[in-house]
Structures are given as C-alpha cells and as structure tokens.
Image (cartoon, rainbow, N blue to C red):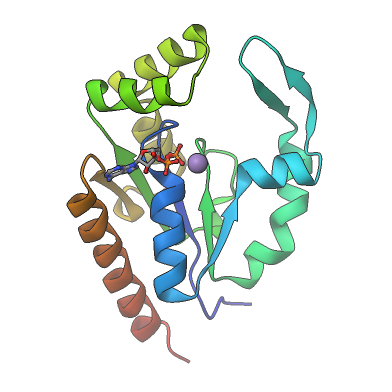
Length: 174
Ligand code: ADP
Ligand code: MN
C-alpha cells in the first residue's frame, strides 16, 4: 500500500545535529520523530553495553522489527547515525548533516565522549562515511547533504525539508 505521508531519514556523524533538526521538523510538520537511540535502549534492541565506546551493541534485526509497523505507515523522521540498514522501499528522503571538524570536536567534547569514540567520529566525518553510506544505500536523487554549523543553517535546512514535504504531498495526493 502506498504511504500517504513520506518517511525521512536524518543521518550524520554523532554531533552533527540530527536530533535538533528532527525535533524542529517534527514540531513544524507533525511528522513523528523516531529517535533510534531511544528505541534501541527502551525496546532492548541490543546485545549489551560496550564499555569502551560507551554505547549499546545494536541488534539490527530487532531494531527493524521494533519500528517496521510504524515506519511502513509513513510520516516518520528516523534519527540515527547509520542509514544502510533501512530497506530502500521504506524511505523517501535521506538528509545527511555535515559539519567542519572544529565544530564537531567541540560538540563531542562537550558530551564527554571517550577519546577513542571522539577520534573515530572525527575520522568518520572527515572521510564522508555517512554520505557514502547514504549514496550507496539509496538512489542518489533522494540523498541531500546539508551543512549544520550555525543556527541559521539549521533554520534554512528545516525550511527546505518542509518545502520538500509539501511538494511530496502534492505529488502523491490520491
Ligand atoms: P546529533 O543528534 O546528531 O548527535 P544534536 O542535535 O544532539 O546532534 O546536536 C549536538 C549539539 O550541537 C547540540 O548541543 C546542538 O544544540 C548543537 N547543534 C546541532 N546543530 C546545530 C546547528 N546547526 N547550529 C548550532 N548548534 C547546533
Ligand atoms: Mn542525537
């Protein structure tokens, strides 16, 4: 069955602004914010805690099962630092947020990330890991890269996604 509302992934290295963007977009559009971090924790889609990385070891099959019904209905914003596990057929737009390394360093340091995790995330951002992952997993025309360094950029990013959403609804009206 076709969706009456689209599904949007907001992805990027930790600290790029996924949750901030998702919350603002959800508030303005009524789309539902799915914080995958919370789903993993609350619905126990994991195989335990990794002490070195200070993060859950995610069970991807459990995670997909946990969100499948909701996402298939449409109207979801999926907020996570990975995107290659979600089936192509679920997704209408993939937003990849980007920042410069100095900004990222400051944001992650403010979160007291362990050094190893901080370095890994810095490398990931420098090497375009999430952008490559998005382009390899979805059709290039649905992948959008957006800068998220300033508050003005966040505002214009969210406006741009809202415009895309309005257009999608027109194009997919029954
Ligand atoms: P993520 O969910 O990708 O880890 P967050 O949305 O939690 O990122 O943002 C990390 C930090 O950076 C927060 O303190 C947030 O307020 C700040 N931030 C994110 N995007 C921007 C932006 N475009 N301009 C200013 N601050 C931002
Ligand atoms: Mn987040």
